[in-house]
Amino acid sequence: MQAPPSAPPEQPRNPLHGLTLETLLSELQTHYGWAGLAERIPLRCFSSQPSLGSSLKFLRRTPWAREKVESLYLFMLRERRRTPGGPP
Image (cartoon, rainbow, N blue to C red; front, side):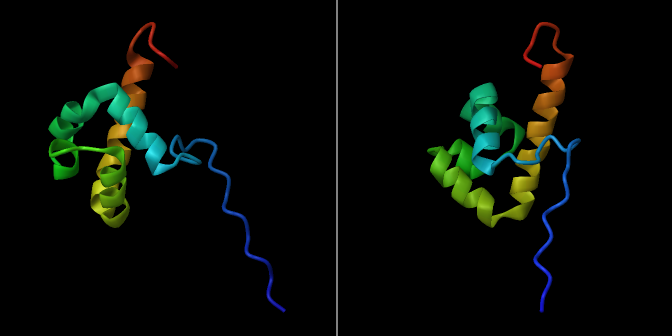
């Protein structure tokens, strides 16, 4: 008899825990805009006819690009915390 799969460990200090790629990308797009994203991460899905759907499709198939998006999201969170009067 097999033991049931264990639940993933809690990650209370991981700001990405529980967030979907769609949420990350939506927040980044709102904060930087497509042009700002393309400037920070030079990907065609951000610069040539950008859309949330096509960008998600590309990022889900491309681990290195997803890592760059996650890193930019973490940078954006740090930037927000440093800005006085900004959102927490």
